[in-house]
Every structure is written in structure tokens, then in C-alpha cells.
Image 1 (cartoon, one colour):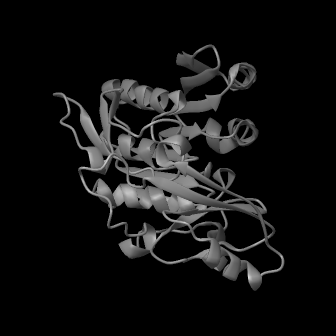
Image 2 (image 1 turned 45 degrees about the vertical axis):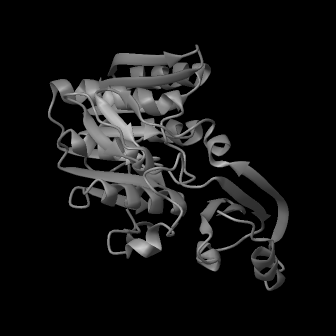
Length: 299
């Protein structure tokens, strides 16, 4: 694995990781009443848009496009930024509520023996539940999607029966699944995501849960990290990437796996591939006949 593909965030100052938002308190329903989103197209480095001031949440970069998130309108700041960068173009801009962005309110929920709570809406857990504090920011993995909850259920099922030493979470998003594994006793967890903002958000959540000694947020391509030794690999990730992961020697050397984010046909193809690897499917969660999560063991 090339060293230049790994970026650790554990030495960053907290103010560099998540923007300060003085409006957030334990009484608010969400951290941001509204999101102001600017959609840019054109090649750029993440460092080009590292800071727009206090109202800037972050930059979600996908290939040659980017979404800039703000807590307040930032037309002037964005236009000033673009004026000196002719290779970039403002394609569109949006205003929506925080709940609309996430597809529903970010509220506490239970899954797999975990009690997931946003910091602004803390509620008591039931006896025996592990509390996970999660501020998703604007990153996928708040628990609104069934695949996230199914992965928690799979982690809960596995750790109820077995002790897991090391975990590799590929496509970690907010870091929720990595944090869950650590809460259940994993000694070392790598949370990998190729999106810079996701890795920053995961680090903030790792710190929120006081797990920086055991959970490490890494920005990079999942395919560059799949060879790392681990007892369990979790991948809630794009199908195109998962196809390559399950064919790799590194994946097939893992003892346990949880694969999610799969639609019906994709799940069938992945399970066919796993059968060729002599893997045992131990359980499967399906939502509305569409979303599939597969839990199994390599032989």
C-alpha cells in the first residue's frame, strides 16, 4: 500500500475538523435549520476551498464536481472564489432544510443493541445498549438508510457471539459502524473513506465518543486498504468498488465480512462471487425487497 494514499486526521485541531456552529445546543432539533448548497464543476484540489469562514460546513467532492455546504447564504463569497478560478463553474445552487438533505429528521434510534444519538438530542438508552454519539454533518450514515441500520444489526449479532480484535470499515462515511465495532470491544479499527469531508466528519465522531486510541479515520481508496490485516471487514459502499473488493486476495483473507448498500441484482451477483470464494452466508437483511446486507464468514 503506497504511503502517500494514507492521510491520518488524529493530529488535527478540533477547530479544523468541524466548523464551530454557535447556534447548536442540546435543545435544538438539528445543528442547522437550513443548508445552502453550491454545486461546482471543474477540476480542483480540496485544499482550494478549505475555508470560507464560520458559516462554511465543508466541501463534498466527487470527481470533477463539488458541493459546498453553508449554514447561511454565501453568494458573494462563492462568486469571489470563482472569479479567480476560471476552470471552475457554478452549475446550480440549492436551499433546503437539514432534514430534507438527510431524507428525514436525524433522531435517536436503536439497532443491533446500539443506541445512536445525535449530540443535540440526547436521550437515555435502555439497559444493555451501547450509546453511540453521532453528528452526521452532511455525510451519509446518519441511520436514516436501512443499510446503515442493517450493518449495525450485523455487528451486534457477530459481537454478541465472538470477540473481534481488528476491523476494517471501507466506505466509512460518518464513522458510525467503526465506532460501533470499537464500542463492542474491537481493539483497532480503520475507518476508510475516499471523501475528504467524510473522513473529517468521522474523526469528529470518533473524538466525540472518546475512541481516538482505537479508531483511526483515513482518507483514501478502499481498494488500497483492503489488504490490511483484519478479523472483520465492513463495506457499505458503491457496487462497482465492492465487485473489486470481494475478488481481492486481501478480502478473501478476512475471517468475517459485512457487505451492504446492495440492490437485489447486485446482491445476487456478489453472493455468486462469494460462493466461488467458498464463503458462508450466515445472515441477510432485506428492506422492501430492494436493499440487501450480507453477513458471512470466509472458510
